[in-house]
Length: 86
Image (cartoon, rainbow, N blue to C red; front, side, top):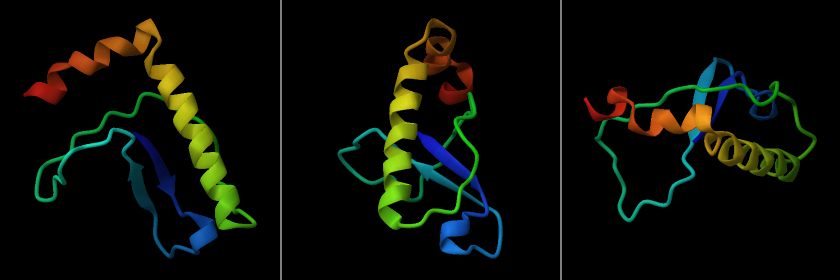
């Protein structure tokens, strides 16, 4: 996942939010289930975009950065962390 944590100025949010973009394709929805997340890094600051397309382009870049990051040996161990199986 990649996550935006902040005010999301493009959408003029009035309060701080955490918006999670899940990158795995699930075969069914999981509404009503608990979602556990672990923040492993920081990619970029929050920006106010000139268009929705520019925002989407940056999210796609964020996804590529995240995929490359979790492939590193230092991050692989978190896939099996007891936090996610308890």
